[in-house]
Image (tube, rainbow, N blue to C red; front, side):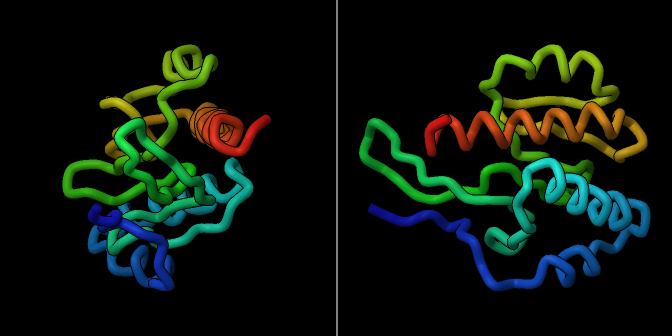
Length: 140
């Protein structure tokens, strides 16, 4: 069975952030890295070449496939910033209702810039998503 392509690495988060060409996006991603570290209680680590992840958990599917992934994370993409957050926790809908301008798909949250969202609500969302993931995989 093939392993995951995206794994935690020793690559520099600072180098990844510094390489973001758009100054506004780079500033947003630097601020987001600080916010996610504080909200998750985990330091930033590069996962593959394009995801800044925080913490790690082990998953196992019914098919038997298993691997490691970051608890929460983000990536600067062409059109927006993708945030990787657990989609399954009780506070999610209420927090999203107060967040601001965003799009979602499964466990991804897409924002164009941090100014479009309420940063206090985003911090709450990240903390709740991280806690839910840790609880589900490590026990409460």
